[in-house]
Image 1 (spheres, rainbow, N blue to C red):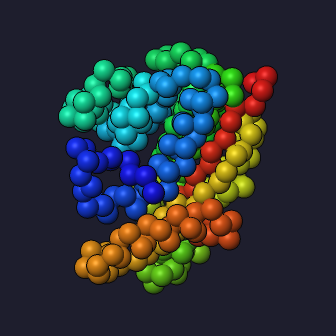
Image 2: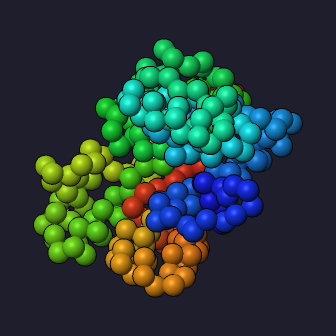
Length: 263
């Protein structure tokens, strides 16, 4: 399984716990970028990362040789992105601009990108449909869309297993999937909702993956203290990610698609 923070100098560092949150998406995304590069006959793609923050995906994508534009509303995040890109030796391939997905074309070119990442954005915008449409309009013909958003079922399951049964039921029945006023996530999605948004925006869905099916439920002390537990859990997550039966209980949902011809 690929790691979003590749080894340097031939050494393989221990996998961080953060890899549980990124490994499945990174594996899918890196393959999609490779396929897109082969299709257009270039080694360096133009990639847009909306809400890319400090570069958790942007910097590894740049390390593959691609040019990455990160749009984020936080100047602090963009400052951290600049420093992170410099430390990784890819400052010349990572460009950060302040903005958000609703005003996307105030800061980036329409139809100028081979791939668009929209990770952890739709939960926080006023109009998710508009957000998806803008992400798609930023794509070149047949470009790739990588969409990652909070899953409803994972939140319901987590609250129930924590003994918060009323909150679990609230999340299950709430139109936005929120478990209460203290819920830090404004909106959650089902597979059906996400794929409908993508389809209406002019994207053919290629794959759907459940992300963090188990990792948010497994006690951290178990993963940290049992030899080989982290790698075993990563492999389990990868195997479950492609199984539709596990999508409904994933903490996050990942949709990969291609801009439809004529859009």
